[in-house]
Amino acid sequence: MAGGPTDREDKVSLETTEEILQSMEVGMTFRDYSGRISSMDFHKTSNFLVTASDDESIRLYDVANATCLKTINSKKYGVDLVSFTSHPTTVIYSSKNGWDESLRLLSLHDNKYLRYFKGHRDRHSSKQVVSLSLCYRKEYFISGSLDRTVLLWDQRAEKCQGLLRVQGRPATAYDEQGLVFAIAFGGYIRMFDARYFDKGPFEIFSVGGDVSDANSVKFSNDGRLVLLTTKDGHIHVLDSSRGTHLSTYNVQPVSSSSTLEASFSPEGMFVISGSGDGSVYAWSVRSSKEVASWMSTDTEPPMIKWAPGSLMFVTGSSELSFWIPDLSKLAAYVGRK
Image (cartoon, rainbow, N blue to C red):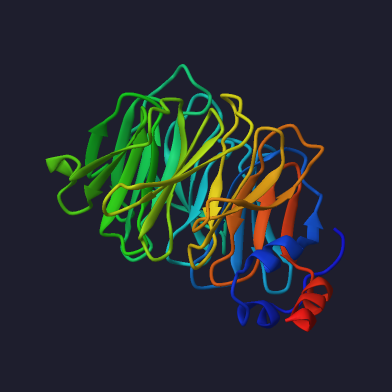
């Protein structure tokens, strides 16, 4: 562990600008992982961050105080993807052991399994579930698997509530309101009404001929934008209501065992992303230009997530890093104004 972040209050009062992005640097790093971080999630309304890693651990962090509150080991099942429910100490996670494809609802507070969700089947892969997205306003979530299905779940029931078949590796995401979800594969993003998903997609958006594997799909906080990352190292940004292609950012391709992750800044003005060479990049949505980059000695793309309502993002590789603005650089910038 090194350094220490500044008070969150300093950052919340500032809006994300190019200058702030360019000033960002690592303020705190946790180096006590013995495997790569495979997934991270911020809770929407608390100061908590959860990580999953190849060392079979799930870790809960208090972001405001930069402390690890709890480490839970999932030695029997392994852990790959993890997401918070609406409750700040309850998560859903997928296993990584090659023989058990179920998802688990886990209370981090007392390390108890509250429910198992069984449905995905692919005995030939050690990483069956490749996408997990929770609807924060309701009790629903969706999971996408290499068995070429997307399953819809209710946290209160063990059996899935719906099944959609796909032709390829699926990436899935709910919008912030929980009214719409997106499923991406094969060069297209399909938009579904969460209430009438069985009627099929109400919109199908092309991402311009990029048919490489979909890695992750995300909505901006206001729901107006949607992004898709693909294995070939492309980050496509589209208008989520009309499907208008706004921009494509290009980074190094990723291996089939890695995931290229990108994230919108809280107000949707910027996109940050990893890269196949381990670097981190930031772009302006409005101008489509790269505004900042941070090189790395790593050779795999980091997981990357922007903290809700804060001027901070985190990256996860073989260590967990919190990125914050360097206020001394910003002071010089403010003095020039």
